[in-house]
Length: 245
Image (cartoon, rainbow, N blue to C red; front, side, top):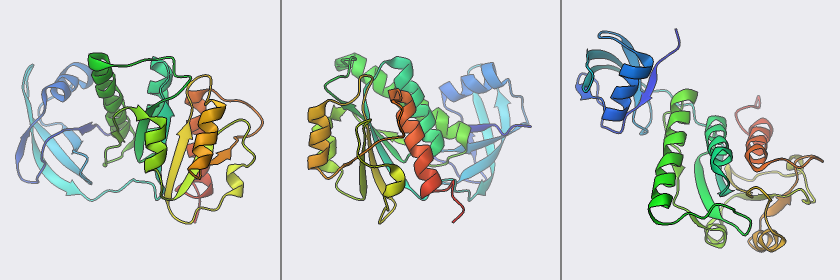
């Protein structure tokens, strides 16, 4: 039977009862259709996970008894921090979901010259919550017990100025190097991926100014939602937990 893993934004401790937050309780009721005495796995993003047994499963109220703490760590040894040029709805959602599954540590939506989506005020706050929910759900699905933070939208230059540690990579079809030519000195990797339409020449030059290497992924041009995912998979194969060393 497939393990039922659920994220809960609440403290967890063995030998105690926990009230499941409303949204997750609705998922237990309406989607998973779980019953009293069934087992679930809970995590709150603080590391490890907890085996629990459902006590009450009612329409508006679900609680569980926390049985056992499991010291499980499924994080990659690579600390990949990816900036994504804001793109249209499903493309951005896909990029966030799959990059979390592949082990990215932190995400940064950035405003770029060719971003076609303009977000402000309430619309921005709603989208921010939506992106974080996608990341949380991807952690649930992939077995990760540490949440991936989707940071507040910022300008590209602000992100570049703050990304001064480790290996710095800009994806560009015109890049003069391939990933396999790089040799990271540590596990921190900052990855910049443009929106649909790609990064402008000025933005690529700006990233180069801040010591980002322009890297191409083969001879084909990938969509924004494909490029970042492909790059992370390649990094995990070259230097991370897809490799055998």
